[in-house]
Amino acid sequence: MGVQRLPLTGVTVVSLEQAVAAPYATRQLADLGARVIKVERPGGGDFARRYDTTVHGQSSYFVWLNRSKESLTLDLKDPRGREILHRLLDGADVLVQNLAPGAADRLGLSAAGLAGRLPRLIPCTVSGYGTSGPWADRKAYDLLVQCQTGLVSLTGTPEETARAGISVADIAAGMYAYSGILTALYTRATTGTAHPVEVSLFEALAEWMGQPAYYTRYGGSQPPRLGTRHATIAPYGAFRAADGREVLFSVQNEREWAALCELFLRRPELTGDPRFATGTDRVAHRAELDAIVAERCARSGSAELLADLRDIGVACAGVNDVAAFLDHPVLAGRDRWREVAVPGGARVEALLPPADLMGVPARMDPVPAVGEHTDAILTELGHSPADIEALRADEVV
Image (cartoon, rainbow, N blue to C red; front, side):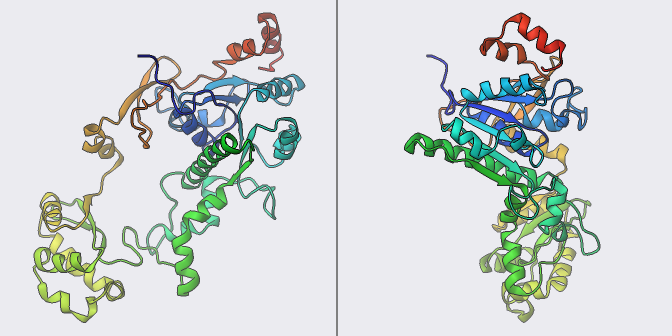
């Protein structure tokens, strides 16, 4: 049997990317077999390489976001660097960039300008607040967007707000850029037309804010901050067991509520209690209900609580820390871990992409060092060893 052809084999992506959102989009394209050429600054490269040094001297962010890519260093302020970039684009299918506001236009990489010269190229722009409108010239980072969309006002406890523990605005934008590029590739393949793709961190996370937005606009007030509790469902949240561990569960319907009262709380009379008769009633009397549930949970260990809840058909789970997540039996039992090489020769564990395509193996190639593929790519473009040495001496690459 020959080597399995991946779905995006033959697609070339050139990416002027840094940080999280754009690299996340292109890594997922690389997972599917696309050739992703990551253009980095000579010397330091993508600044996400220096966020931390926890993974055998490499940044945890960079290792997560940049496997299976090729790294080419170019100084795009130098005309020779720009010329190399534009020659690369002549043979590319997709250009992804999350440069600072206005930088793409200055480099001759606007979607309108590229359309005239390279009508089959799909340009994808990832910005903070969009390329038009009153905030088009503002830089944006994940936490700023969490604040601007109101997410931070929903996260935390009644006493204190909190940022989400992962880069949700960046991840949302990366996911929409990825799906937008796939859609544009499909449209080009079926119609011959290459549509530019634009995604902003703000609008990506705004979409994820849909439920609290409706709740606030039509309910008159926004959902309260409740820690692990839920604004519109009760009981819902983490309760402490007798062994000090937390058990989280939620009651989603009347059947589960009746089972909880009769078989878990051992208080069947609560099903007829007017304070708890409907989901809305239970939310309105959340404090009283939570006190009843907390008292019951405090009488049993966490393992017993989880077993009892599962037995009566109520969804439940322990509250893991990250170390417990890494050892999760589902990840081990479903064989989700692979090894990936990182700069310096070490190998690290990495999770397979979450979308399994039956019969298509996962691509889990190395994380590149800064400029690791520069010489090979320049040679492909027709540069001689002497040319490359001269470019390197002038710090163009």
